[in-house]
Image (cartoon, rainbow, N blue to C red; front, side, top):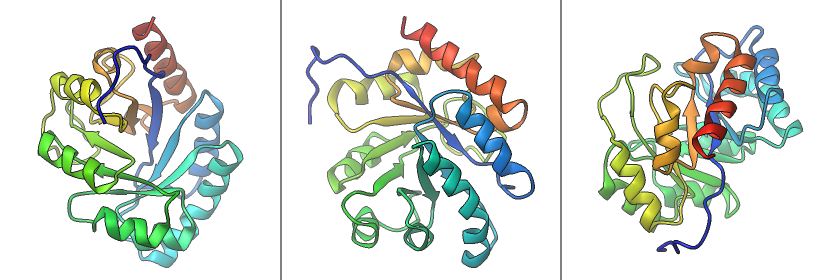
Length: 215
């Protein structure tokens, strides 16, 4: 799994995470965001709704992602991901195992795991077959309660040793993402920085910041 220093890194990509409210006009906002620049993946993250309602909310969003070749990832729920035929699932530490997700979703599914600030959790996820690991929070965030703070050294360590992509999450904005890009984040997971304002301008600003950091 070790990396060769002669292999150039691929550009850092955007990974959008939904706000909790994805009803109303949100599908139009998602389409605008995805059309503003390349987005590798979109994570469907809703809370306190039953699976039937979640599936109803997901349907237009999943279609928008498919039309733009953006991976549609379900947060937390292996069952919902299977029901939707999603491209993958993102697992917290209490959301089931990678083995369970792989059995339910198949070999082609993208399975990501929240690893907080833990090298041990990340290595365990990699050994269990995760397709990516997520580290954070790197900055203060209001999207969810922050219990773990990760440092840039975590990205540098992972990038130097492992081939599995890593995602940086937590308070990421166009103004602060440059250090994450330079430290080795393969993906920037962003939510509030996009949805709390003009999503088109935000996606464009992220792409400009990533390009500047990798210049």
